[in-house]
Image (cartoon, rainbow, N blue to C red; front, top):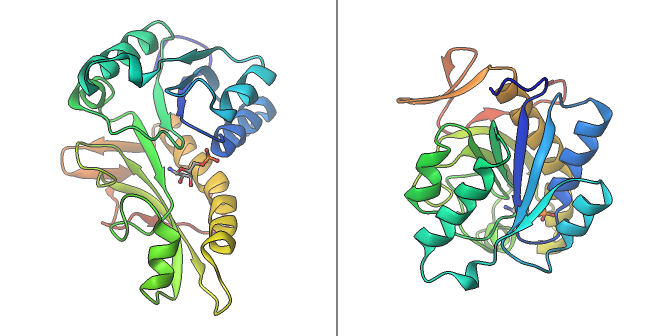
Length: 221
Ligand code: GRF
């Protein structure tokens, strides 16, 4: 961690920013003992940027379309984050595939949230795919980010039952509400030094985390 009184987060977004809002609220209320050092978007019109501005947080926009390749875009983000003394990077609906330029710079302190029970349904349209497959449950996974898309070591997973009347939209509503809870739990574990990425995978309190992550329970702090 940096020498600052509270650890500093960078939150990377591309859109709506409801997970960002959960972090804004938690940092403001003291629920999460951290400060948001910067909110970075690759899209100038991301609605989440307005949420950050409303909360008086520093923002940065680095438009990926202005770079010739993924590596130079990633390097620009690394350079930007270097000016904010960041302890933990939170991907919150950040819709760009990252290269080793970024991933290596923040290895072990880079988390993502994905709206499926990984390893099921990496990529997009997760809820519709779960419905199409006739699954009985869906959910969300917080994981460390590695080179593999949505494939880094899972940390925490929370499930919702799929009902006969569910649509992708109704499922998405239930899952996003859970996202806002579980992402904070995983971030808190990391900031407390309880969660680490070891060579063998993710560990919580020194013990290896199961391949599908810790299963979320409501009394988790
Ligand atoms: C969430 O469903 C998250 O799991 C996925 O992108 C979405 C972002 O939503 N990675 P929001 O922008 O935080 O509202």
